[in-house]
Length: 379
Image (cartoon, rainbow, N blue to C red; front, side, top):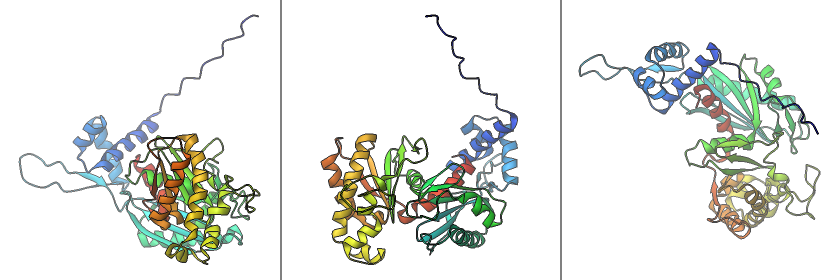
């Protein structure tokens, strides 16, 4: 038959306007200074921008409180070049984590240093979301006041599926928090003209691990708590899936004849290796007691995690698994059991590395705050 019309190719992108170019160049300057303190001339050399452009951008960044100019050492001939560095007293980022039974907040400055961090009990499983959001807003106000910094953004880590607009669509362990516009509601509760964004807690923890300097660009980050979530990093990028649901490891079935799960299924990983299951296996009532004497809980968790993770590792071909949350607190003994389970089930060689999280239970919290800061400095 006759050939149909040739489909048009994608439209050529609109040329970037002056404001877009200037934002990009500001990011280049901040990124150059984030690597190491540098003079205007050194920034121009690192970025390829002209000295005049750099000087203009630096003046703006000094006025905005993003940079500070240091006194160059005296001595020698000629005018000394004053080095510039990120301003530790400039705008900061707030990380906020709303868990099933607690809430935590921290403030990170432009250099990435955490200035204040606090975690308090807060029951979100049986209370209306408004109560938890008010508690979270109060904690944010406390840490911001203590830090003394102005705040550029608040980023929230949540235990469930989160849309780009900051709506918590589904959280199996928070039955009253379904389709809750956390970002919008929290911004109203804060009474501040500050952007609020939200993301899945395991995703943010995975990013924190990426930024921790251990060189792990491809990995599964497993966050153990009341639920079990995972962040998937492939080539240094977070893989969220088509609907933001990638990483729901806790609802991979490991025992089809097992216990009922909060998601409505049966025998999910969470029912065997979530905190409630581990406490039951160890015959203790709280996490501190579990950490002090985990006993049979390690065998239970190691075996179940091995089954669930083997399928994910065989599918994605990642070379590393990082255990966070409560799993990080259980230490080397759990790492060894998971590694042994993976060696018997995963096809790749060399064996998959299994590590405890570098940041422990605060990985998601710090990932949220550091994400804000890294966006600010363009890194």
